[in-house]
Image (cartoon, rainbow, N blue to C red; front, side, top):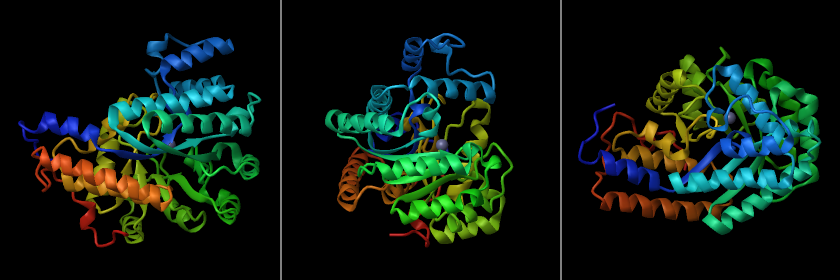
Length: 366
Ligand SMILES: [Zn+2]
């Protein structure tokens, strides 16, 4: 990474924050503000392991999982889901000019508390209407199945999804510990998801377990995924990298992992993916819990002036989102205007960083 220009560094950071952004990888539970979690836990009669302002400071990965479970248990009514979605968009819009977001939510996390899919959906749809009204931000929903809950639970979630089909539910995802549920185990479910006309994505090749890069190929071929969440470990196999590049595969990468110690590994992987010509979108995963936001995600990848690199990532995000074409066209117009403002502010059109422009990839899809 070349050193930034001292004169333009501060304005670049501020302008970067104002570029309209499309986020395709964020989980409702992981976006819950710590204060909201504490308040809802008190309402539910659940004890906090520590003070609210320390809740998201983890001792280790298992500590994070415990807090994540607690957060899942406090969302009990439709208005809780509405509030979670609303507050995330409020924060991301003000800090990072969020323009469109596609939320993962795991219905199965809430069944144990007696919270039905319909209740979750009603709250999230109310939130979507509210953020459109108050911030002009569009949002879609991607119900997700956790590998650890198994294929039977995935089938139950799919049945619920198919019994309630608002336009905002555009696809389904697969997440959870990748080493405890290979893609093959969900091939039959994903075939049903495809047959129902829903889009498909999966968490794959994450960096916390030594899973094979070939899982990318399994998600592509057996699950029919159109997007791939994370994907860092594809870089462990040059042949898979070449396949993904030839496929024009889009990875929804998240520059901030759960713990600070893993920051350099994650950033190194994303930079390597970009240098290899892979297409990525930037996202926050569990933003409140990982102490990040969408502006921070862009700042981590673009610390220095790099308009072509920024444009490529932003355009990829719009290409990869599951809005209809009029919605995408609106996003493209907003992006073009904002990038024009960036040039008018004196930022050079040529890259000042070592990151390559994805636009230069011969494999870029239209
Ligand atoms: Zn995720």
